[in-house]
Image (cartoon, rainbow, N blue to C red):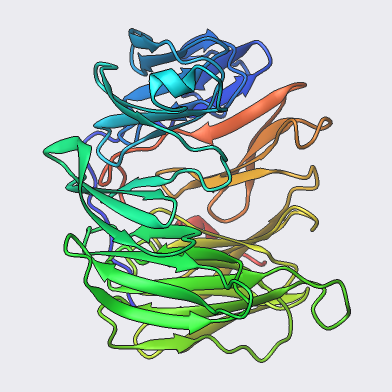
Amino acid sequence: FFIGSRAMSEAPSPLRLIVREKASVKLLTDLESKNETPTQQWSCSEHPVVASNDGNMIAIPGKSEVIVALMADKKTLYTLKEKNVRHVLFSPKDTYIVTWRSREKEDNQTGGNVGIFEAKTGKPVRRYSQKSVERWPTIQWTKDEKYCIQMVTNQLRLYEEKDPTRWVKKIDQSKIADFAVSPDGSYVVCGSPEVGSSPGSIMVYTLPDFERTYNRSLFKCEDFKFQWSSTSKYLLATASAEGTGDNSSYYGETHQYLIHADGSYSSQLVFKNKGPIQDTAWSPDGTAFVVIQGHQPATAALHLPEGNVKNFVFGRASWNTIRWSPHGRFILLGGFGALQGQMQFWDVYKKKIIGVAQDRNGPKYYEWAPDSRRFVTATIRPLRTVDNGYKLWSYAGELKFQRMIQHLYQSSFVPAKEGTYENKPQSPRLKGRKI
């Protein structure tokens, strides 16, 4: 088992943290300074602000408009006259920006409550309707943006890069509940729930031809979660159904399948322990995945996709969350939400635990920095109205900095281009440290 490293640029950029408070949105770079001096600052946003994938732009939704600005100098590129926007996303290469707002009467004339715009200019591309935000987003691009897939009622539609306004191919499938495009644009998977006595299904198709490579019929499936490996060779498909409330199926039923995209292999993951699948996550290079499964304390294990081999067992603890560092060297296994904020940090290369920590403030956001050396936990509103603030931890679980903020709504790292930061090993000063 090996996870590849990433090259380092000559002058790595400083880490940047977006902090959204009651009165302002701040961009911080001196992250461990007690004297907070924002690099940039904008007026308040009621909904999450979003950074572009290259870290150059920021989208700030407000009551009557969405401001799109440059991170470096706060220069406003343009303003989208879209009111009450609740969700924003950038396409993988930051060519497009997509907005979602609740449907209003005027959308019947404008073309829909979802808008697609050119990210650099704000020029409208097209609009469509999406009533519920539950399945957001119903549009996905391949990593190179060569193709775009949109899910509509009983249908998947294919758009090409040369003309994002017209679909060129479609495939009909009844009651499509969810879908996912493979990163390299070779495949798309979709799932349909069971209806009455008719089974549900998971199907994989090639792109752009929509030729089916895989089909599985199954019962006890109401919702789906699809996770592609970064190589696009492998897929984890999770199908679940709500519980009935009795002792036998209080937590519902969940089934997980490992599928080779070309249809050459598929296998249902079978676990010794009873209980739900708490979390699943692929390594950044797509050569392995980790599953946390079972009632608490749950078991975490590393699997290899070729033959579905269990490669390593991390153990059992109060875990429900997996976070791989961007370089894939370190991994966090945590217990958040209803659990007590326990965190274990592992060196996956060495299969060795390197640190433990606990955030008792009930964090609702937790993620690695792009350099894989820092990890942030944030206690935010409206999910929690007390003990708001964020904490910065080292890759080994050392608390490096914390700031309490009375009204904190968002604390998230700005993305960085791949190759910006070196894939550094554990520091020599931590070797031999007692855990």
